[in-house]
Amino acid sequence: MRKPEFVYVTYIATTPEKLWRALTDERISEQFWFGYRVVSDWTVGSSFRLMQGDRIVTDEGVVLECDPPRRLSYTWKPTYEDMRHEAPSRVIFDIEPRNGQVKLTVTHEQFEEGSKVFESIRTGWPAVLSSLKSFLETGRALPPSWTEEHSTIIAAAAAKACL
Amino acid sequence: MTKGERDDLDSVFRALADASRRELLDRLHERNGQTLNELCARLAMTRQAVSKHLGILEEANLVATAKRGREKFHYLNPVPIHAIAERWIGKYERGRLQALADLKRGLEERDA
Image 1 (spheres, each protein chain N blue to C red):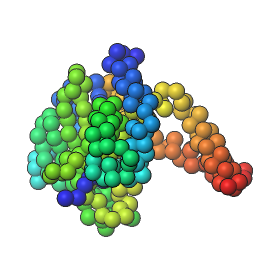
Image 2 (tube, rainbow over the protein chains, first blue to last red; image 1 turned 180 degrees about the vertical axis):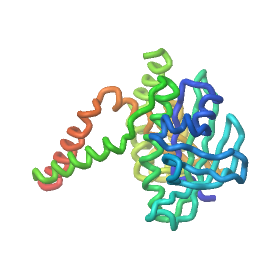
Image 3 (tube, rainbow over the protein chains, first blue to last red; image 1 turned 90 degrees about the horizontal axis):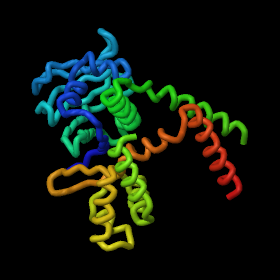
C-alpha cells in the first residue's frame, strides 16, 4: 500500500465544531486562508473549489468523505498552467478532541512522481494551518508567509553575491 | 503563556535533549514516512529502544504518524520547532539569519 507523502499535525485550542466550520465555511476560510474561499455543498460526490474572489478557481476537486466534525476529505487539482496536467491528489482532515484541545491531522497523498503540486503544498499547508490556528485561538489570521519567503530568497541571493 | 503551552514546550525540549531521538528526526528529515522496521534497519538501537523514542517524539508532536493497512509510517512534524523559532526569532531577523547561514555554508564549502 502506498504511503502518504505529507502528514502534518497541529493542536488548536478550540472545539471540533468550530474547527469544522472554519474548514468548510467559505466566509470563514477567506479570513485565514489568505483570501481564498472553500466552496462546496459538502455532499460526497459534490464538487469542491478553492476560489479567489468570485471568478478565479485555483483548485478543484470532488468531496470524498464528509463526517462532521471528524473527517473531511476531497480531491485536489490545481488549475495552474504548469500543474493542471497532473492527476488529482487527495487531502484528508482528521479532527480529534485531545486534552481540552483539538488535534488536527492533515494528510495529503497520491501525488504523481516528481509532482509540482507536492512541492507547492509542502510549503503551502504549514502557512495555511498556522494561520488557521492563530485565527481560531486569537481571532487574528497571519499574513501569507510567502512574502516573507520571498524576502529570504533575496537576502540569500545577496549573500551569494558577496562571496 | 498558559500552563498547557508551558507543558507542551517542556515535552518538546525533553524530547530533543536526547541524541538518539535527534538521530531519529535526522533519519526522517532525510526520508519522510518510514516504518519502524525501516528506521531500525539503519540504526544501532534495539527495536524496543527505537519504539520507545518514537513514542516520546510522538507525544511531543515532533513525529506524526499515518496508518495504511497494517503499516504505520512516521513523519517529521515541524510544527513545534517552528513555534519555538517564531517565539524567539523576529520577522525581520529571519532574512538576515538565513543570509548569514548561507554565507557560513558558502565559505565552509569553499575552504573544504
